[in-house]
Image (tube, rainbow, N blue to C red; front, side):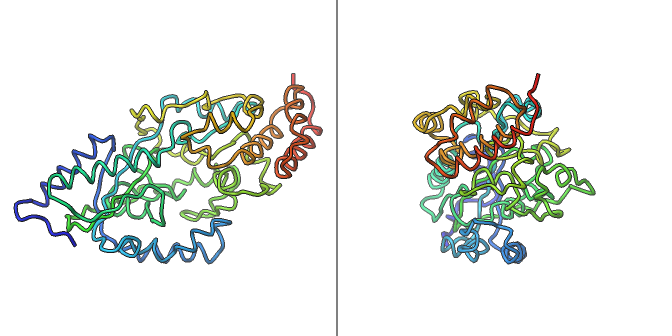
Length: 360
């Protein structure tokens, strides 16, 4: 443990850290300890039921998730931060979903990948702290290791875990990203956040694939974010039609949340939509070759799905779109694709299109 210098007032230091965090673009900051025993039990039950799907890494690092000091020895406190990520034009999200010939990309993924951006900011925050008090032990995380980030953020007062399993904040809804600085500094703790979902169940009812089995219980195997990003193989046929035109992630449970009216738009230019991906036509995106995909998704979270996954997802969306000569031509152009994964979903989409009437 790094002891604070005698001349440092812990409360004053925390106030300074909050100021520095805001100067670095973080919307809020809170401090918590390392006890996650209750959340570990919830995670173990979720894993035992197999609700994590093919995300084997969730089980492999189970113990580290609930023990921050095992993940980074010496950890005494966790400095949690959140960064607003909602770009301007959120009202257009529903409009894109209502235009099945366009592709919907989760709002957080429209701009630059947040992982490196936030990690660099956390590193700068650590350097600011070190310049004030001297060297100390720390490690920065941004969805990059087995960290129960939502539980830590809740304990640090940054929001509560909603029924859709996302973190909610009374003044920012859920449109933000989380990061952590594990540290050995004996800093004062913030009070945990209280829950404010009440009897509302809009997120549960709207889920296109009914992935939210009950409040706080998500079946990742049915979640569109999992199906279009994490899953590397074929999307189960019964879930293809409900996916609609969502080609990377899904925001329905956030869009419908009553707390959404308090969402704070991001001022971070790196989160602005790139390449018109906030509502591009499916046929245009399906025409990208692999070089174009790699070039246009450089530094973006979309790269995670891979080129074959990208075509797989768009093929499903094209199958769900209204029948038209242009859509049929786009699908037929990929019918002989070298990837069996792509061919399977194109065949499904063509078969689905064959059962529709031509749109006017």
